Amino acid sequence: MSSAKVSVMMPCYNDERYVAQAIESVLRQDYSDFELVIVNDASTDNSAAIIESYEKQDPRIKLLHNKENLGNGLTRQVALDNSRGEYIAFCDSDDLWLENKLSLFITAAQDADQTTIIHSDAIIIDDNGKESAETFQTLMNKSHSPIEGDLKKYIYRTNFINMSSAMIPRKLLVDAGGFSDLYNLVDWDMWVRIAESARFVFINKCLTKYRLRRGSISSQQFSDRLCRSREHIYEYIIINKLDGTIPQKICSQIYYRYGATKLELGKKQQAKYAFAKSFKTNRFNLKALIRYALCHLPI
Image 1 (cartoon, rainbow, N blue to C red):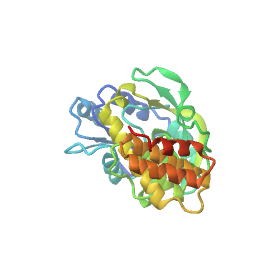
Image 2: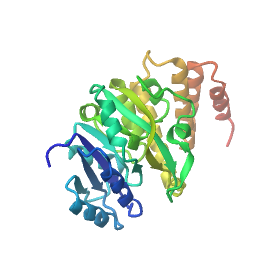
Image 3: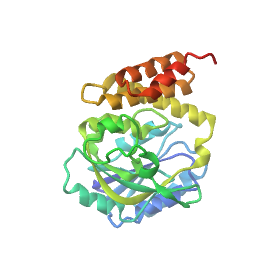
Image 4: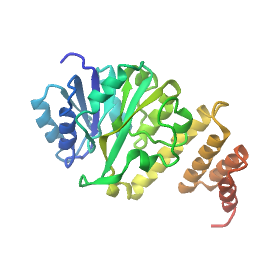
């Protein structure tokens, strides 16, 4: 097929229960100028066979196979390297799109330049597809950060943009270095690196169904990986992004959350330093002072 306007990226690892639903939700879009790049990350279940059956039916699907399990970040990079669209959109293999998502995004992009990221809200669903009363924004944006414009100082604090609800100009993503080799928080890592050069436009509709799989976040292995990824991202932010343009209050919050992450990893001395830095940056952050004091108590 010739180059499509949008490349939709879908990494997949052992998602035989959901991947057919995810693919069908993309194929049902009322906007058709897209390619669907699916990367099977060495799945050991029936995912590959399910995807292959759809690839035979629709020429817009491009299926790639990793010879070994590369993880979330590197698998997304494989998809990016093999995509051709002017815009990059995302649908994870357990998420769902509403049928008018792409058409609304493309309409919004017509009035935007190549530094603009379009995103929307998402309905939260569980393992069985049951919808929650909460949306992605009400669940993840507890501090009510702005969701449009220049968001870098807010993105540095925490992630509140759902990857499956976003569309990015390809050049913007490539120029920011694409995806890292992290297993978890790949989306936040990307937003941190890309936010310096981007502005965000929000479509105030739920156009994605984001599956929050409770079982997957309970394992100790997942929790440890998540913590290490958070540690890596905060270190990158602290070293590269906390210049004079970021308000002191937000800098203090970043150091505080970095300290809390260090504590979770059992790195008490580094946590003490982070809490001290948090309090010195903002003397009104009494939580940081308390956590610093508690770090001096014997275990």
